[in-house]
Image 1 (cartoon, helix red, strand yellow):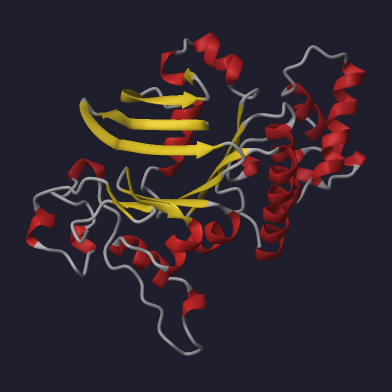
Image 2 (tube, one colour):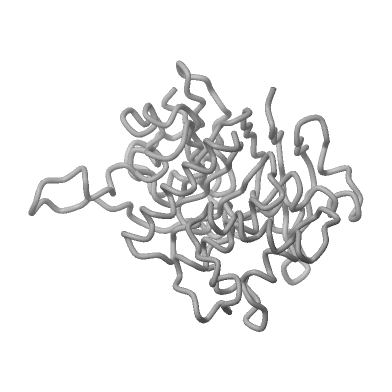
Length: 313
């Protein structure tokens, strides 16, 4: 049974009276205890996918089609009060840039205690927070510290505590290591891995780093211009990518080169959603495009255990 199943999700923004389609038929599933990486450049729609699951879209954005199932519940059909009962309990999210999400006028302990959904006394709340602080590697004294007194890595540990305090079944991690140095990034990913295994969490792990996704996830979904263009087992996606965009992402990794070799970057930019090219959205940057690529957007096709959107297959 899948913990999360997204079917044909379409999300649009209203910008200056014009409808702009951002997510354009996203299909994605996460099984029980499965960690799925959502990979792609900035501006491809990764964070918007997570916000759609949480039903935390901006006021000018709306879901125009599709379904989002959490176990047997279609989140699209829930009213505001009903989704608020699920958010934080069954689904939690770790945001990037923790300093932007922690309130500077409350202590770390108070902010995590406030996230507890159970009806507990003040003393019981504090005890529960101190227990999870110990799990994530924070000291008891950190309970009384304000966000500015904590390092970036410690702030992210507070955010992880807040996300896991109610033992959710689904965790959305939106580039949780982006603002951290390399050493702290390794510590945080190791911590997350341990907690995911301990609690049997299902996870959507959003990152622009396909190498990190390969080591952290069971499955990788590659997103481009609001569509998932390739999805499959992490090791296979990394070692034998099928879509030209995925191949280009892998070839951008420094580890693929010897010392002194020039790294091959992807030419061009992610397209503006208001001016998407006809056909396959990647064709202006693709080195193997055909005539059909310029007029027809490819459908999803299964190649072995991988699903890919490309006219090559």
